[in-house]
Length: 479
View 1 (cartoon, rainbow, N blue to C red):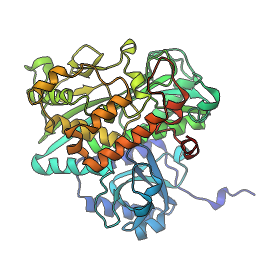
View 2 (view 1 turned 90 degrees about the vertical axis):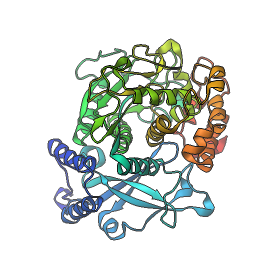
View 3 (view 1 turned 120 degrees about the vertical axis):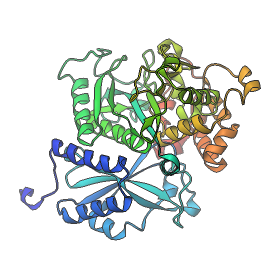
């Protein structure tokens, strides 16, 4: 029976999708009244009869993206009382206090490609609240959002972030979950940096994923294969910190879905294969006040202002304290290997790509600081909040003059060391509160306990299987 005539769900061409999403993005970045945006989005959902469901996204403490599909009519009637079981989310509430609330962030509203998400759907991000409606402390998105709003209200300060996210493309669906059986990943291409023939599997994947990102308003700049075999990178324009973090989550989601549709796996493990370069998420930061980039000074060292250098100083001073946030998995510490262009040196440089922080060439618009030691498997909200707030409020090298001399000048070599430094830091207690800090450290300790204490040379199955982006309940319960 032909059912096509029975269904009339919304499917929008990519060029129109891009126009709609860019207009939504402009409203968001220009800080149009939240009430106005909410009214417009609700009216659109109500009037557009071909929309059947709204996908509400939120991110857990470790950085995994979770999605709940709500019937459109139900959501419009009950958007002030959406609940979910927080005890089912690692790092969220305990079983005895499991119910949490979701508040729709109507400014983070996306029209989506029907061939990737399915026809008749839209995506919106949500904030996690306590039962009583108060902000949930383990929701890093809400923490970043509130901090950015406070800075803007205080003196028109806006935090800008752009990311360069690398990943690998492997043969077969669910290659990470099947690693315990296969013991290896299979490349789809061995071409290397910038080298991939038009139409081959890697290039086809990059093209389709980038098309979807453009359609969702990412404002892509360039995309290409990376140094390692089957490695890719797609870059998009900077945005304010919250929108940029949302885009990181959508970037990884789109990449995984496009790969799966081609019977492939897009992996964001920092170092999935022995003997080749790992993947990073270079994170570019700048701060604007009243529209002026505070990092630009043509007379400053490397073209960077004193404000920029002060922020670098604070980030480097606390590099060991926050290493676990920037590298939150056992596998991430394999990437920090100087033999593979790894940024493990606690220093800043305009030219040394082994430095944790680099100062790229820039002008009045693009002057920025690039933190290169960030892994692609992070919680982006937690990372952006941590880097920006540490850069503004963290201790300086002068504050820690005595201890700074005794600190190692390279980042921790294993997650065990990083956990200890994270838990003993007064800075991380100030950033997250002791409760959230301990929750995060406990989750990382659980993963470390399931993996070899010393990394050695070869990738071990345990660090893949118990990775927070791969993990499944059945395997964790067998340990």
